[in-house]
Image (cartoon, rainbow, N blue to C red; front, side, top):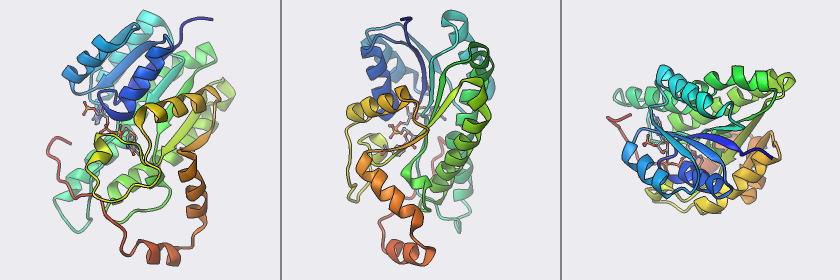
Length: 258
Ligand SMILES: NC(=O)c1ccc[n+]([C@@H]2O[C@H](COP(=O)([O-])OP(=O)(O)OC[C@H]3O[C@@H](n4cnc5c(N)ncnc54)[C@H](OP(=O)(O)O)[C@@H]3O)[C@@H](O)[C@H]2O)c1
């Protein structure tokens, strides 16, 4: 069997880093994208397989296209592309300053995913194989108070990935939506509230890879959160409002670096 080729965005920490470590431990050729070059470089030094790094912002579609073309030129079409880069921030619509955060969150979490997949689809179609994987979130299943930008961005990725899955179905390209519950990463380390079924990133990465290998269409990980998510979908709006009245909220953030 030929060597697996995997391209991952958001690989400088958390889930993306764990996925890189997982696939490298399986001997895959890896392409890694994030903005923080120093973190990518130290990860590259640690990984036991051929690893190429690209210090690219996923909002920059031209830079991502160049990275994708470089990866394809060196190794051919990837078997797996994982659009994982993402940010989370508490937002309130009534704050004018938060508009910048709304734009940043949507740009990175939704359009960054489109920018990631776009340059690969043509070559994957020619190869008639490959998997495009989008990291969504359970936060996209229902609207979370105080996290409207994040919830909206993840709901949008869930719908986007479903459209893409049907579009690409005849061409032999699989699309997998992964909606994580709580995974222990720098993104969740700042949360001041209880996080049920919190999972270690290395375990999560293994489970994500299993779902990708099985060509799952949509999966929530961990499974306990998946059961909860199934129930959440059917809760009527009035009951959701009541349940969320005193729900803990993501810390508010106006991020200049967004
Ligand atoms: N942890 C959880 O419980 C959880 C739950 C549901 C969904 N998720 C999703 O899982 C994904 C990974 O999150 P995580 O928990 O691993 O968080 P994390 O540790 O904060 O990692 C986020 C990654 O995204 C990269 N990134 C952010 N903005 C970027 C940009 N503009 N361009 C390129 N890369 C960018 C970051 O790298 P740089 O800063 O170096 O660019 C970093 O590598 C996200 O999409 C997140 O929404 C996480």
